[in-house]
Length: 118
Image (tube, rainbow, N blue to C red; front, side, top):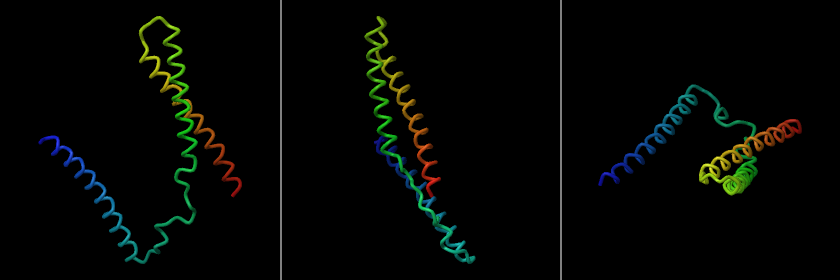
């Protein structure tokens, strides 16, 4: 019975946070409109690309994880120590992180090209 109560409390808290966020935003917007502010204030004129390189990011992350797993397995076969999980997980995080850093540099370079083109 306590598990159901915990889940209900968690969902209630999440609902409460979202309710407060949206109701506060709505009240704020209504008060701005009542004071004579233009409704275009709420919308930006430039379209934002929320996730323009999302597939590149996930692709590079998964390739980094695969390379890290392969190198971790090679390390476990190379060293006589019984540290297989340590080698595999450390290489997964190392190469996954390196791929995300490389992805950041590629995205920054491409976004600078996009900004110069506009």
